[in-house]
Amino acid sequence: NTAWNALLGQRSLELNHVVRNIGGVIETDYHGGRGGAVFRPVDAAKQRKAAYFLTTEGLKTPKALFAPAIVTKLQPEGVVTGATRNAESILRGLMDDGRARRLVEAETLYGRANSFTLGELMNLTFTGTFSELETGAPVDAYRRSLQRAFLRVADGKANGATSDLRMLVREGLRQLARRIDVAIPKSADPTTKLHLADSRKEIERILTTRPGAAAPAPLSLRDLLMGGAKEEAHRHGPG
Image (cartoon, rainbow, N blue to C red; front, side, top):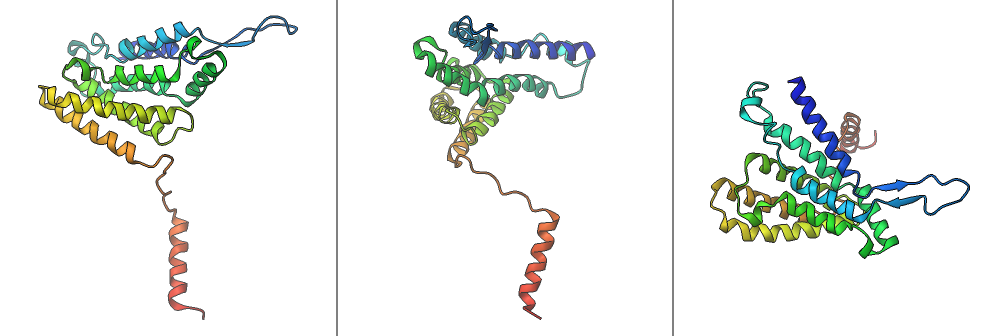
């Protein structure tokens, strides 16, 4: 079990190193004011290649590590959750607010033609996470869990991000809803149909939430006691 967890941890670590290339900044320590720019973005082609790898291979379940012959000897349950946790870490890295701001700034400084843009990143992320919509393949339990995790992350960005990420995620969700509407009638797998219909409803909920809206803070014991005291005083009036 220890060796298996170590393998999963190492895989996650290496993939998150790849994530750092996207929106990454290279620092060159020039002395005495000599040389060019101290800070420059990672080459756009390298960022694009990293994003494509992560949204295709990185989000796939490493089936060799989750083979029944292995996992049934290690734990009674939690296999799908464990696989999703690693993939969700990648998604959160790709949809990080700081990373989004750096991509926008690089595009502003160097131009779209010379940059890997935030829009490109979001297109790859949405397409890679829901790749079954175009292929028509059934969505297995691992992927259903991943896609639910993606919608949780997207919810936070669509209704909480303060950068361009918010508008791009909201537009990506609108496009995703249309893709799901096309895919549902074509799917021959009953579980996939239910999952896609549920995802479609979740997208609608996310998009109809007012951006920035927050749930009211829970009342503390002091609030409850003070509220009760005020109500008592109002009922009896001044003595």
